[in-house]
Length: 255
Image 1 (cartoon, rainbow, N blue to C red):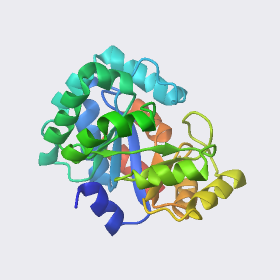
Image 2 (spheres, rainbow, N blue to C red):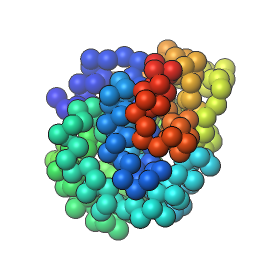
Image 3 (cartoon, helix red, strand yellow):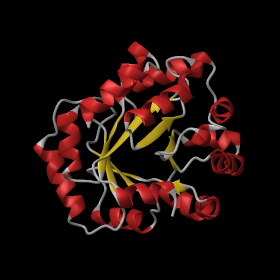
Image 4 (cartoon, rainbow, N blue to C red):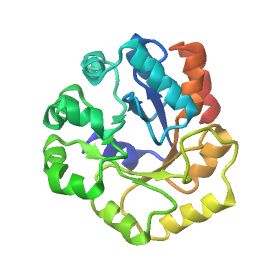
């Protein structure tokens, strides 16, 4: 059983946090990871900065731009996290866009993920059918989960197909918009969560986009295995860097 499977077996109300590697300073990646684990975070989605992040709102876009200006790259990221399993035990997944991964060389990329202890990948712009035809075997041999996203526009049939091909969790995008903090979960979103739950899926689900405080986190947890906080945390470290006390305060305010 891998770290992701064990997490979803053993815990509920999972708190997953997204932040951009190399932000706000180039060498903040591992210190922020460690501070998040120490604060009680269950899972981290580590963002690989990209110059054209179509699904990201202004906060995460700005962090990506800053990280790139800092000199962040996939090569640098792997150097930073090569020894993370000496101090980090929680699951870590990488999230980003397929173009930089393809340029790096997908076989080399997957091999590096396995080597450093990455548990999964979220590549929103990697087409589902292309993944199944070209890369599924590569991911499975390395034990790396490929995590798919669904939105309110995803049909029940497509959701079932994604469920049948998932080996980590399903990322439930809460609304048809870019990322960004919101103060409350709307009734239309709850109707969508209920529709997904009534399909009878086997895969655990985390809800993301718009989760920013205890209220939205707790509401999301009523409809899934947990939730993902992104923009609100990126804003925090943009203001305070890798300061452990501020990160701990933030996570406790959510959980």
